Image (cartoon, rainbow, N blue to C red):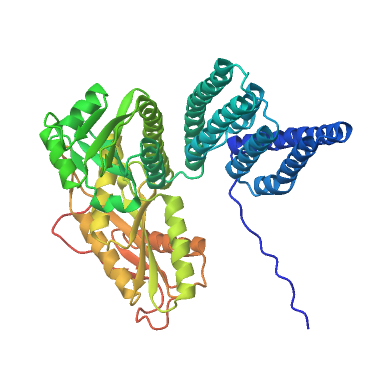
Length: 543
């Protein structure tokens, strides 16, 4: 019985525009070189046959082998995505063919000029180490060819031959300098493109901060980077770090403890601090020594002309940061500032979408979502009870009409604070709108625990409220719905609590009524609405 073949899918990293351009250029270069090599090999072979000179035949074989290397080997390497390896092979093989041909038939300065072609073609694609090796081989080949020309032809012009070797070295040096500048610009572009791509994949503020911190550290060659967001006027809170474990050593900074940071923010200048620099700020040097680092670069983060934070980059070894790296760091610092600003905006919008702006409590949408999750959890883990308390203030309209809407809003905020003291931290208190509040209680041992919480809330709301010098008394009617399974939907459960609340109002306000629908058999509460009188505190409540 044959075993079914297994198809293995290898996920490749997406190719950047710069990489795609390089592959296309190298592919076209291979096409041109292959065609030229095949044509040259054919011409050399024909010349060898017509003249009977075996040297031309040897050169034809060399050029044909070079074409074979390009077709079979270099193309395969390029297809695997290794641009630098393919170019290195092409350049070294081409140089070897030119040198071997020069030994067979010395051509002096012409051969020296030809040697520059594969080297110049490889410049944009090779790394610094491979490029330096190729330059040495190319220039060494130029010198050897010039020397061979003088040995084989003593009548050759010494100055012309050696001049060609010197000029080739100068040309290679200038090409190397230009290539380094172009590569630096290309690397900066790739860095910015990579950062933009990373930032587009997430809106989570913490992730954004870590991404920007990593790119800043890599761009400047520093070991670590911590981003601080300006909180208020005197505090800097950690926003992102690289590496990630650096966050465990990072604490909120105050500008009073580090006055150099305050100057940096106000004047928007960069600051370099080295442990060996006696002129550096003593507190910054102490901070650097505490981190066991040798040098630190501080950059201001500015968004929309306003300072939003600081980037702190440190290294275990002394590093010099040239102007090009510093310019790139400033650009990335701007991206960091925008990430902080966008993170704040995201948090603000998220807060507004899910919370009541007056009280800061979860709004109706978030409360319904949490009730739905709580019911679903009962389906996975039956046993504990959950309860929903529907709370409506009694005679709240009188407070608005007599004391004004501003004091009415203040009353709602104070009611929210008191309700939070009546529940546990794991419970949810929400404002549904107007003077209506709701509470979600989870993991109750019995349904009666919900009634205890509701009674406590009624007692807390009975105490008078101080509204900017005016005293106000309100009460609350609370309806309670309890469940120990997932047989009821969110809307139904809220409707039951709402109906029980109206029953409490009809029974005289300022009291608690539990819905009798779907009550748990183990709950000792008798069927039918159960009214629990509010606690008496000695304060007369409004009727």
